[in-house]
Image 1 (cartoon, rainbow, N blue to C red):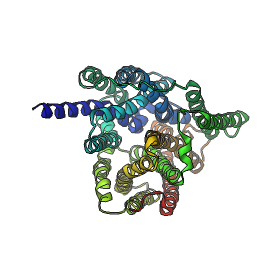
Image 2: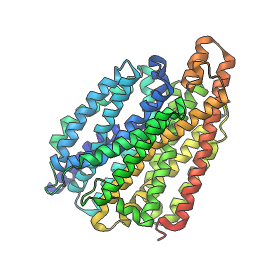
Image 3: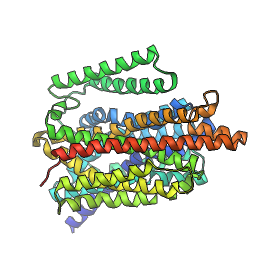
Image 4: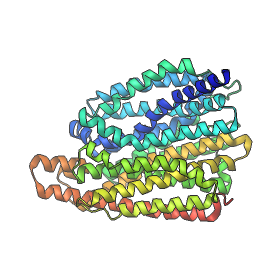
Length: 489
């Protein structure tokens, strides 16, 4: 009886850990659905649109290691409680924001708070589930919740926007985090590392400053051209990144153990994780904008077209490990990368017509199925390829590669799409040239059907180029995989 009670308590504890993680995952991509509605109210510039999307993701990636270290020192349960409260407060601010800058700041604070929840949760899973088999199952369930959250985000956003204003995608975080604050003290033990190293604030500052400087320079280049200030900011970002890397190699307890990258197998797998995250993160933005601004669907109508993507990603996250028990890991990963490539080939041929809806849905579903099955295998390879005493460092590298890849994808592919859109539209004197959201709003306000058709055609061309970029990146990842960075037995 006691054993059964313990099992049930651990399951409830796992659910308590999964609840805030689900919200963190949803917020990675839900803004893509709300962006057209938000833009109609707040009128952000093209650069502000990208910052609204990726400020959250960059802060999740850039803060994860530092907040994880803080949680080790002050207690993981306490860290989850503090960050849940901060996340809820920032969500409320974002919901009622009246300027694009306030939305960006709210998303950034949410990202910093969310970055602490995952490492603290994973550490607590290790404490709760001491049996190896049970721990693997718990971690699999936890990652399924995370991947499922990213997959269902468009549908959740569509349902909310069908009945409420764009701020509702923020406000949903308040009750979820309130429940988290209520149940976590009752279900989770407090744990901390008695020998946790001192938090390296300089490394944290260097990494965040480097990321934000490089991203700012890229966005400024898209909007203002290659000015002197752009080059200066870009140079500063690169120098800060180099200083960060140099410091990590010299510290006894680095924030990020870069020495693992010296292992060819780990380096190639990290590159594969990063690159696949880049194209998945970037393409998700275009998928939602294409359905709403090119196909003219409401957020809820667009959400229905994401259902195949949701179902296949959740199914694939369980199918990948099953296939790995029956086939060589390299074979499974190669097959899933090919499935992803097929999805991006469909993106490369999206039309402006109604036929683009099933084509876009099929492309997103194939890409989601491929990454859903390959992702846990790539993560496992990084962790297992590292020496046992450095498995935690390997897991941290894998997490950062994934989160940073998503954020970089939103910036790089978002900027690429903006360049193509403006070049194809060729209307520099109008607000329509800012972004597809501006274009649709401008054309609709004027009742200019010719301009509306041009805006939609230009953005479809941008989607096609992003699809081709995704194919090119996946061919590179396939080459890395064939060179043997994934186990063949």
